[in-house]
Image (tube, rainbow, N blue to C red; front, side):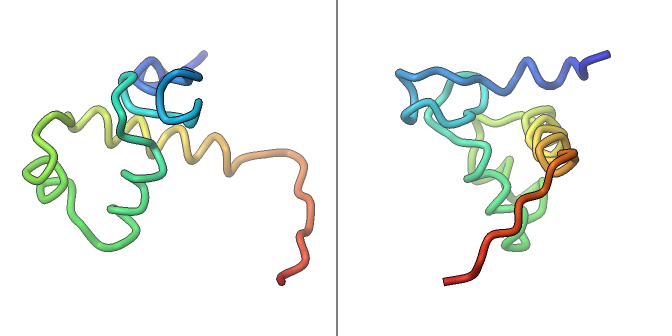
Length: 79
C-alpha cells in the first residue's frame, strides 16, 4: 500500500523542470532534504518557510527513503 503522504510530492514538467516538488510549489524535495541535512530542525524550517506543513517534511523523508531503497545499485566512479 502506498503511503498517502506521497500525494504531497508532485512531478510536473511545468514546475522546476519536472523535479519532485512539494504540492506543486516551486520548492523541491531536494531543497527540503538539504535543509534537514544541513542541521535545520523541523520547527526552524516551518518558521522560515510558513507555506510548508509538517506533513510536507514527512512526505519528503518518505520519498527519499523509497528512492534509497532501490533494488539495483550501479557503482559510479568518482571524478
